[in-house]
Length: 205
Image (cartoon, rainbow, N blue to C red):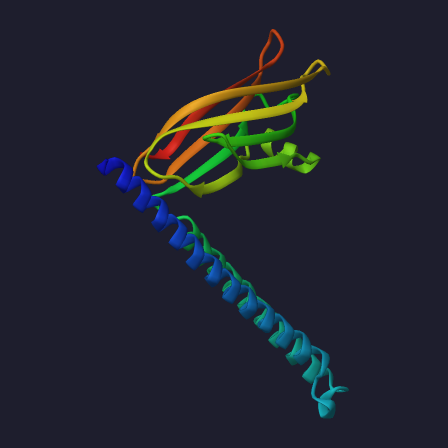
């Protein structure tokens, strides 16, 4: 009974945090839009008395670049704040995708389901596959989960090194504690055909 009550409270807290984050996100978007509009208006209407002055235009360009830098810095801070509000460290779960055998395996798509709910679906472009082949990783999902046991199902489609197409689905179990959970789905082509998917825990509990 106490576990059920704790889980219910955890879900209520997650919902409250998500609502607060959405409100903060809306405020952040409005603030960024206002900055961009102000910048565009200011650039479009320079001082008429100095419009023909090369020195004045050079100074204007420098100020525009400074404002652009400020806008980018503010946008980065807002994004970090939004992520903290949306995904508190005690409930955060992140899932990454990587390639083990990166020379010939081609992923067309990857779909993630957690506890029976579809949470992520991605179709890969050429540049993304190239980055994975070079050892890069892709964060395909970030979300919130209560503590306890969970089921992750991954479905993927693509092309094997020999040129034949494949579709594969596998399920994994993992346990969420009161720390961030970071999971990596590593895809590899098997020598006898087909693919292998391994789930590794990169950090957290």
